[in-house]
Image (cartoon, rainbow, N blue to C red; front, side, top):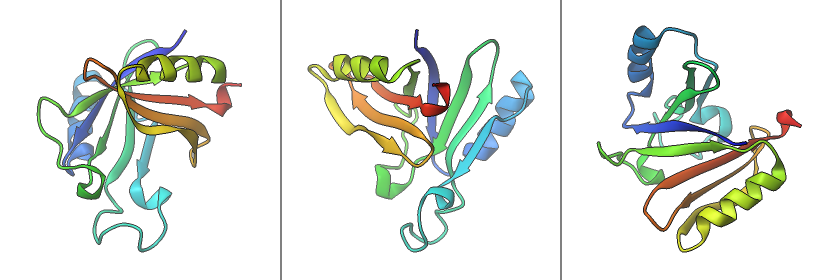
Length: 142
């Protein structure tokens, strides 16, 4: 069965916010990826490469708080109150396609499911009720 986690978007202060959450919940970051790690030289505006593309803090059994900085070229700035999504991590490629397609019925696909550089199938969809889902199946689960 798929795991869901909250995913929060920030305006350049993800690292600061996650430092706070780490002080509250404890633990260690399991992932920190910067935009410059996934994009080539010149693909990002000056100063944007060092911002957080993905950060993850495990909290409790099987759940994590996830987040990133929202770049203007990617739809930013983030607005408090609507700056979150639900990260959905299916347990198989088949389940990934089933859940993504079901959530897309009557909704709007922001990014179709596709293989991405971090070794996963990823897609983004807003369902018919306005909730944004980030669907990510990592091949390392196989």
